[in-house]
Image 1 (cartoon, rainbow, N blue to C red):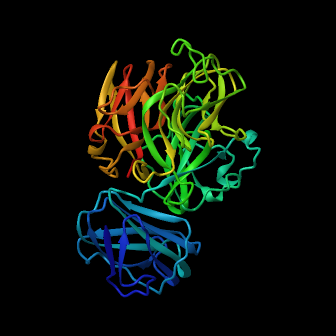
Image 2: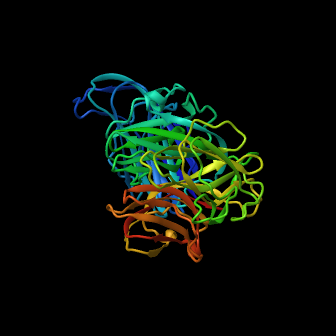
Image 3: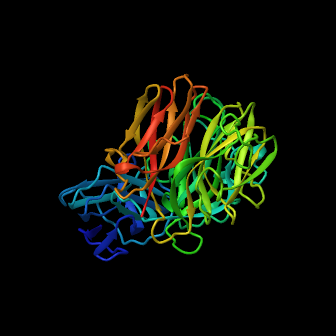
Length: 535
């Protein structure tokens, strides 16, 4: 995909008069100078604008125009006009331009641009000011096709607590947006992960993050959404807790401008975010590709479902117990040697409150993170990507007694040049919002979605997020698996108390790229997507 940008009015720009833009690669032009404004403070003055011609081939699904202010303290407003002819209403250009980076204001067109020629004019207006002002910044234009990003590979890291808003538990001293206080109702908070003073080895080259998000609400919490910084907040639920219980859910979140992410809470809540890895375009040593497996139950400690005691069976995990599991060679699921991380769903079945469960690579110190929380003693599930030790082992720790179930749907290992899948972060998007009756299966044609257009036909697996809304009636389990295969003995969500609960997970694609969803009991259900795996 290319798009040629041509300045229609004279400019002293940082790019030549004609330039090629590759899909997903930002192109920048800067502005800097002294501007005079003697208009009404209410109407303001246009201090900078320029008209560009875009030649689009093939069609693009999205255009981001980011404008950053690098000097000056006055209030700036940015807007963009887009049309099919160069006769877009013009403003006045004042001086020459330079560029330096800072936090942006981003305008996004997501309706798509078909093949053809377009004209757009970004303008910057200054309000509530009269006189002379020095201001500088830059414009960044990014065009994206449906195959929205370059392929990325996983790099695991020792699990680390990135954000902790509870002062009593912030003993590692997180500062700024990573620490206290709690998020107020309707608050958004920006996390620039490279600026963490606790999780220090997150590079600026990260394109998506592997997170586990725990909400500790002050009351009913409609939802928390974590999304790329400087983009419109998507219709996507990372965590929900309408009954005000502590809940956890994993998330693969695409990095936004400057590698930052945005955290939004609809209602007041403390928030905990742990990180266990990130996806990068790097291809060097230590990068990992995904290898999907048919979902399979590898650990089951309940004797009524796996009567033989053993390292992958009963008994339950006792309070303060650590148990290590070497997945390769287990008697229940085929897991090869060489895996550096696993994509698993952990379900806890506690007889009483379970403060937390932690999963981490065996042989290392237990980190200050949690994979599951069930303070109300509920049966809950959460899917996580857990790094493994050199022999393929992970450790589980339960603060309180609990039965534990672990289902595996794939693993990450060094790329073999043929079968490994790369991750393509996509715009977070809602695939379905529908109702299931008792004991019902439904096929979801992911590639045919009219609203989620970033997913390539080459997709072999998906990063999904499911939410059940049972309206108070128990939903013992919901299962998602590749279309065309037998429904596995595995689950991604449990809602025995009829509560609203969300769960993110990875699932292989089935026939024609579709997945099947089965609900054991009647429920409303929402299915969302944040990326896909392909080669």
